[in-house]
Image (cartoon, rainbow over all chains, first blue to last red; front, side):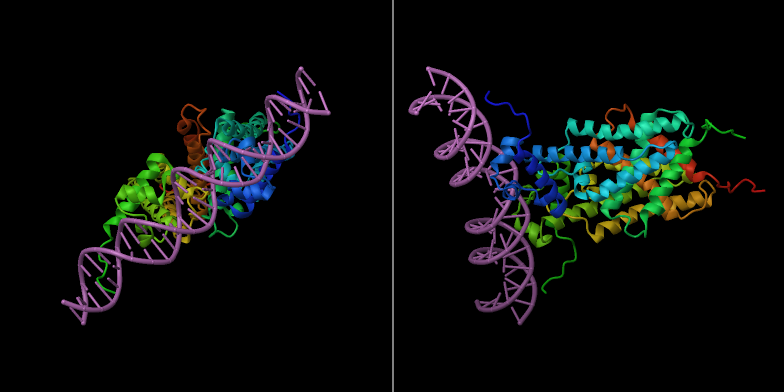
Length: 208
Length: 208
DNA sequence: ATTGTGGCATAACAGCGTTATACAGGATCC
DNA sequence: GGATCCTGTATAACGCTGTTATGCCACAAT
């Protein structure tokens, strides 16, 4: 048994951080055990003692990415206007993706990276992120901004639209448009919001 | 100079097809020059004489994928109801993605595959696909189903929603939902359509 | 018949993920 | 205090990868 690990080994933390850095700086192809090892100042064996292999290390990095995303979304202030909050969440979501392009690509990318494939753990992590959207959606329904509906399904619609825009933007398909956020994402959200509001009865004020 | 290449060399065609097959059957990691060579019955050099390297071969496969997608969308019949056609286009788009999961992932995936990165060529190919959506959107505006607006921007909204849903579905984030198409994609399109229609004046009937 | 050239097979090189092995050093026990 | 174990790591090797240099061979042109 020996001593109990009370704190996370420093090398493990440093490996994750070095991997995230390498990913951000030079892209997925730079993520190799040897580069990681030399970057942290150890041997490639560290990857195997702490993670079991490169795919598991990538998974740890992805977990970190989801945690960071959740924190980024949680930092968005909650106002009385739930629909406005959803817009702000969307903006924060995109901003996080833009600031961690390569990481976002690995998190949601369908192409594999070094044998890494999404695991149940990631799907759950993604669902936590998703829950923030569901909560805001429910508030919008409670306030009468959206008509009553299955909040999960509605949030999934919002997520689809958001994620699709971000992916296409990251892939470079919107480079023709001057300001894709103003020209596409904002109207997309507004139009979808109009459709989601149709038939709803505003709670507070009258409806003459 | 010698003889002029009038027809595409057979080996080149077979390499592309073998690559697509290998990709579909065993995923991206199976795409190696040696496996391709043995599959086609040649040496790895063929990849370099005909394509210049693995990334360029992948690019040829992606080109093929975009061509196939465009053909798939072009096969959707055009009716009098442009909005209905857009729905059918969306369905065909998703179906194509589902039938060529790995290929779709490489086409739109941001993670690289064997050093392959999207080129200008692909962005153009993607824009051709996009044009089909733009055309249907313009018809919907002309018919008064959507209110007048920049058709490109509106089509980009539709594409974002569609692509986002497909990506999340492929990534497995909708596995909780029984039938994500019915529960998410369809209402997403309907709600977005309602928002896009708001303020439009039907063409046929009067506009007093 | 000779020459030249284009296409391909072979072999090598550097790098990859992974694994087996050996060693160092601290904790544990007698 | 000395022997023992165990954990973490460095080294080296294996089989794989993409790529390139080399050489051969068949066919077109002269």
